[in-house]
Amino acid sequence: MMYAHAERMIAALDRAGARGLLHLGRKGLEKESLRIRRDGAIATSPHPEAWGSALTHPYLTTDYSEALAELITPALTETPDVCEFLHAIHQFLYAHLTEDELLWCASMPCAAQDDRAIPLAEYGSSNLGRMKHVYRVGLDYRYGRRMQAIAGVHFNYSLPLDFWPLYQALRADRRTQREFMDECYFALIRNFRRMGWLVPLLFGTSPALCSSFLAGRTTRFKPLDRCTHFLPYATSLRMSDIGYKNKNQAALKISYDSLAQYVASLGRAIRTPYPEYEAIGLFDGGQRIQLNSNVLQIENEFYSFVRPKRTIRSGEKPSVALRERGVEYVEMRALDVYPFEPTGVYDLQLRFLEAFLILCLLAESPPISPEEQAAIEYNELTVALRGREPGLELLVGGGRRAALDWARDIVDAVLPICDMLDAGRADAAYVSAQRLQSETLADPERLPSARLLAEMRASQMPFSEYMSALSRQHAGYFRTRPLDTARAAEFEKLAADSRAEQRAIEAADRLSFEEYLEAYFAERLPEASA
Image (cartoon, rainbow, N blue to C red; front, side):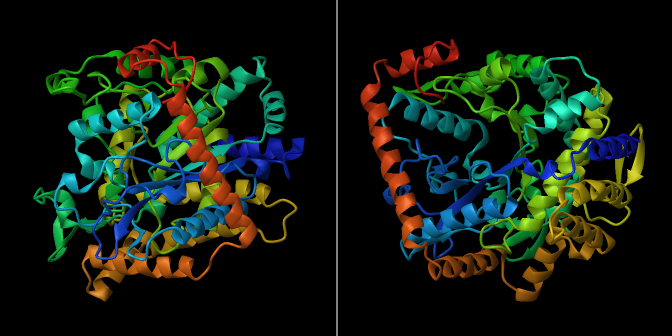
């Protein structure tokens, strides 16, 4: 069993002195939030200037839409510090948001009568800004705007640097440390793909959605009320085939067996023409509407539960950064926004995810065969659509296994890791995080997706009204808790500096936009990254 291997490694790490070291891994968040009006409609106003430049601000940008804010924390070693920083960003946003607008607290978008009601993000007149905008225009033509307006939370994680020499010695591995780290991070990613269905099961909060999102395609869904559709046992429709389980990318053969294979397979997708996108064309009149007509315009278009990541330099593609300097951290992308907390996340949730990622690292992780890949895709979609179904079975090892039994085994295997993470700490917060999930699995009606459906039924409010009420409640929370003067000044300076940096980028452009794109895809850009 893969957990037995992890258990042996945990014991060996403990004997080697890793207790007290492991909790120093770096954690960060990227949390998306739709900006809405008080009437529940998506805001059509521009990204507020007082927030700073969406192109250059280090902690506050936009994702797909001008209304889809993305809040980013730095990578920090303590989970409470990550949560506090995210809380502070929300406080700053609300200090500069009109009373008529607020942040939507759910992953699935609020009512949208048509795609045109979702404004595409703008990034100014620079080549870099135009490239980011055109990429989003291309996404509109390829997938429509509704899917791109879905919000989520990305959890970024890296092991402490001092961990690697110790772990490499235990494994008696003779490669360079960078090669060893790359292989270990890809082992983690492979195991997360095998077991990552656990995240929407435990933390999914999108079992229902506004009927307008479906645009009449309601056949397999059930009506909850006059304006809401749902699936009775769904956990995360966001992670299903109506959200980020994208049919257009189902045939991509992205390999996670090694860094070299991952970069090569992703590169093929970016270079391979796709007939449907060729039919769209690159221009509408004189306006460019796609960066290219290939399977992927750029690497960010590839949707995955988890990604290897490396901080990019100016003018550098993400895959080039990975190839040249190796994996720096992993980005876990399977979290729904948690609507019951003002910031959309909570401390014990993040602690459990950290321990779970460490389990994925330490467990045995062979290459993924085509047969296992098919089982992984089945499990991901099945849990998203009917993860709470009584007696549900998932595919594993050529057979089937009860989903809840498998989930309990994984959560049990996390416990000794939580115990190590708690070393020298009085609060035992990691063990508390594990215990909470163990207790939840003992009573699946406590799962967040079940709780959300129960509370919506009790409120007798449609999805849009229920989430609007929660969003107003969270807005009131932040508006009555302003930042202290010093912290507010820090964020004001970040915003001003970002606006100045955008102006400098715009003034420095020397290439035409078409020359810029050609240089970017040829990896010849001296400045600016996409």
